[in-house]
Amino acid sequence: MHRLLLGGLAALFLSTACGPTTFGDYPRGAVAVSPAESPSGWTHVEEPGWFSALLPGAPKTTFETIGLQDSHLQVKALSATDGQQVWTWIRYFEVSSVTTMLDTDTLMRAGRDDVLAIGGVRFLRDEPRRAGGPTLDFVCTVAPRSPLDPSDSPMVARVRAYGRTGSSARITFAIAVWPEGTSDEAARAFFAAFRVPG
Image 1 (tube, rainbow, N blue to C red):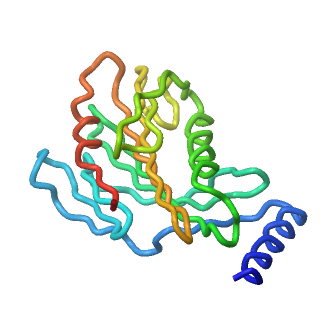
Image 2 (cartoon, helix red, strand yellow):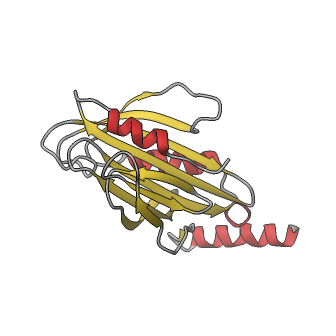
């Protein structure tokens, strides 16, 4: 165990000394997708062992990176929208706690900083913490034509993040964006159906 830990530390120091490196992992296969019974037109998605969710349309899968110190963290992302009331994203990744020595708080901060670095996104407030709730829960304003706002009107975004630790840290961000000054009912439906393993 000590040899493995020292090897991980040496690899981390070596990769940092040689320049930016890419690390982190995510499930490689496609998510399970099926029509949702309710709300009408929504889609049920599941990444086994990670989460199950209802999305306001068929999901699009992309692969992204998040900057972390001098490295890049690999992220899998799903996005879906009903085109009018809500735009949703789920971003998730896993990092070995043994080989990187990164803790869940550091990874959460990196994910939060990455969201707040998106053009047009401005932090508004933290939501109160609830027992058994998400690790992070905050609200932002989103300017028109931001990557999180394809419309010509200002929007509001709510971001929730969940973390699980062990030999690896699994981090999942759930994001809902809706037009400012309108009902957040569709966003609340998205968060109400979102589940991560206990």
